Length: 55
Length: 317
Figure 1 (cartoon, rainbow over the protein chains, first blue to last red):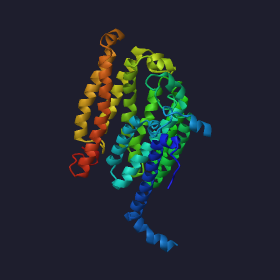
Figure 2 (cartoon, chains in turn purple, brown):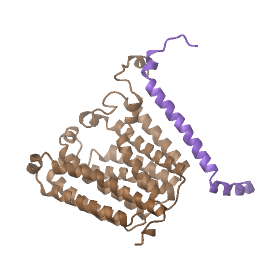
Figure 3 (cartoon, chains in turn orange, green):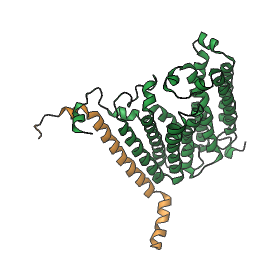
Figure 4 (cartoon, one colour):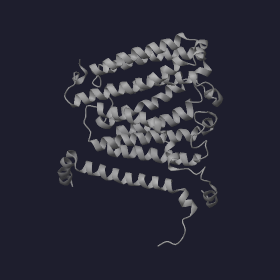
């Protein structure tokens, strides 16, 4: 539990900090979504055995 | 930023999230999003919807980043023009260095992620667009030549080409013609604006055609570019991106646009002053509908194609 009163600076920058937080959350969703789409795509699955054989 | 500056800023001058977003020129971004989306869907290669969404997003972020870099470089002239004086840097909300950092950071981010999400041809085109808009247009030619609008228009014309490249991995006649459509549309659109928004560019010392060559020459230029634009716009109808629906839309709009350009060309300054530039204002409004309807018609043709209802398979009709 924090007994310190909220600093005026934090109140002033609340909107900006919330915005940056939402942008970062959106970035995580985008990178996760792109990874999922790429990994489950037909092209990726077709190339997987060839990579294993080459290795 | 020093500790002192953190505490000395008042609520009025404190940059909010919206001020940083305003650096990305959101109104220009809507055009970028729409035309990139059309380029992506008009391409003959289907794209996974999430990849397509990300591609358009990264193209928009790249366009926004170049807008931030433009505002960083042009802060001095933005401050003296009525239209731009309230932008975040001249208004004192965002420091120029912050705009520079945001622009460079988002440019790298957008290009890299577009390359990873789609392909490096699309990413290369996006990188070139940012370079072209910031270095060639903003830093070099904008304050030097009255053809600045023509050259700047090229940067705004790339998004449909990038969208097409994101889907196909290459460049085609259709994507080049979509580029030409926005490229040739930009000069008459902005010169019409310059005719009735007098004074702003004179004060800033930007060599607009209206200032360097006079208003009569600007009227002639509007007509010449409108005629060239009409030829290019109609040519799209006979490619894979066009079709009968697009042709019908293009015929109507180009007839109206040429009629407007001829009216502007036939007027002199006394006529324009008498009705407070009514014809020029109408032409400017029509130009917004013109571009939206052309790309909208390409989108409809792409939709018909996907639904198997196209009357123009492969652009051979």
